[in-house]
Length: 411
Image (cartoon, rainbow, N blue to C red; front, side, top):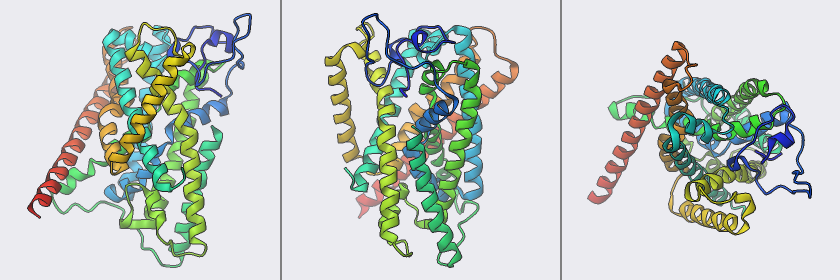
């Protein structure tokens, strides 16, 4: 299934609306002589759930055990559930305002609320977020030394194997129980807790693909249960990964938990299990990469060439943009030392805008007069939490960087 289609009125019997270029397929569709596109008639409920879940479960899952190391198990699991509920609320805002404004994309509803400037801001944020995420993918794939339902299944395989190894070692008494709450010996430790927020924000970003999935549905009313089902599935995978990853490696958990599998796991056939885990997740990233890259390419093209003909009909522009982006991502992945650093930047800037600030802002602006008092209170809270928590995270990261640099200079 493609994540979007050029003409849903040809594809989806119940929708009957034209979708602009930003929701075009991953690759140009085969066009028949009579002008029709060779597509299918609507997406199924399970297919839409797995499509959305594939967008959500990306490289962020590899840093979630490290967030448990920072926060402790109890606050960490609570924060995963909390962000899932916030994500559902923000997507509900997007869908509701899209229906009233007859928008068929995130860019469209931002344009409806904030005009051309709002649409451009969204495009910039999607570009920054997706470049950051794909740099993380490249770092992980490079570290593996291996140069949509399937991708979710591969992520589940990773969770199951990790859980099995953790349980075996726990029963053998070879690993201690992890800490339930964070250790806070000083003020710096308090600031450090906020560094987990950008990682959690990035872990739930899927908003720029929600409209594409909605446009493929024959019954638009299904989008809300699809979002809830997908978030429940992904939250379960996230909690299991965080718990068992941190249980297995404890205070030795690295920002990229896959790097922990380089060491001997202390069980029979350790190297075999490590290879299976690493290969399964490498395959997962390879399946997710095109979906993220598709949104990146279209948003960059829309930002640079807003008046040009559709990208799917211009092979030269399509190739040049694709090659340029892939080259940039590959080079950046070789200079950024850790996926934690990439998540800190994208999660505290572009991702938090896409996931929470923009949907809350359009609700507060309320161009169609449909927001309730409860909606506006939740939106205000969402913006305050997003700005304050990510602002503190940026301050903490900058402070740690300054301290490390100063210590290095003294040596």
